[in-house]
Amino acid sequence: MNASITAYIGRRLLLTIPVLFGLTVIVFFIMAMIPGDPALAILGSYATPDNVAQVNAQLGLDKPLVQQYTTWLGNVVQGDFGRSYRQNRAVLDIITERFGATLILAGTALVLCSIAGILVGIVSAVRQYGWTDKLLTLIVLIGISTPAFWLGLLLIMLFAVQLRWLPASGMFAVYGGGDLPDLLMHLILPASTLAFIATGVIARLTRSAMLEVLRQDFIRTARAKGLHERRVIFRHAFKAALVSIVPVIGIQAGFVLGGAVYIETVFQWPGIGSMLVNAIATRDLLLVQGGVLIVAAAYVLFNLIADVVQVLLDPRVTA
Image (tube, rainbow, N blue to C red; front, side, top):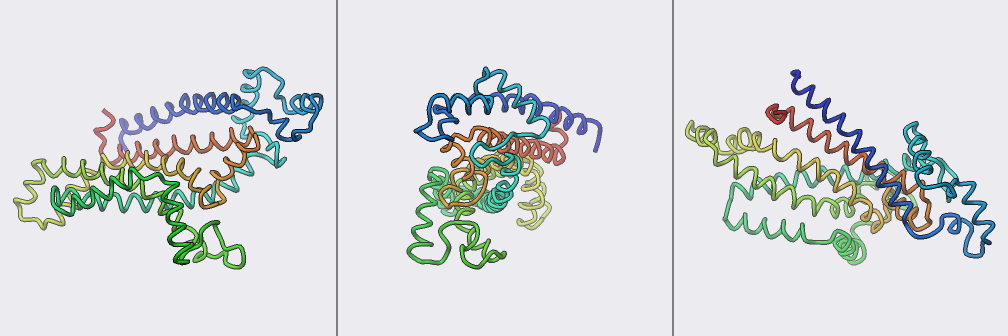
């Protein structure tokens, strides 16, 4: 790794600091502006004003917002995300338990959409304007335009309710199961739903990148040398196009992670998304703030990894 690449990665790492700081500001103050009183949510609708004021004082919610933020940020920097109001447990412990399930779902979806999107994009570019290209373009546009939650409900109705091939919800069977085949059976529908839309985006950009590369002189030279067309496509054209495809996959990684929030709700997947929905419904502010911050930080990390991979593939990007 040469000095320019090392310096570029160093600059990108430094840029993540203000980004993460900005995220903490946005997450904290948006969550604080959500209507409703956490103390009232904990005590119930029959709580007296004195009881509500007492709980707010215990939780520090009677302090000015800026003071609440600085206290929260100071604790977060030290790895303390506070305690859940509703569960009376450390927020970080709850997030850690749930994040594993989300990573399984989002990671599987990302692998599926990357493989499918790249293959569809390559075939579409090679068969430009042919019926294969037109059919794949139509499917991709349908995928991009389809609401994920609607597609999820449709798949549940078809494969779980009508055909009874796959389970409709959960990560494992309620009675029995709990092994890898059981996990894979429960993973098929939510991961496919999550991957479908991202596949369309990756396919469209892969097609554009491949078409641009296929028009360049070195591809014509490779063909003129008599190389097999498959080798020209995958060893030369795809390798060059990969520099443009990698950042898109990095962005889609964040999209897939964010999309897991509502897909987990549809399929009752026990990840961080369903945890956030429940925490928002119960006004568990510290849990919401911690969960959103972790998801946002993961999004930043995925983009950083994509940028680093892009630089390693083509050092000219650092210029």
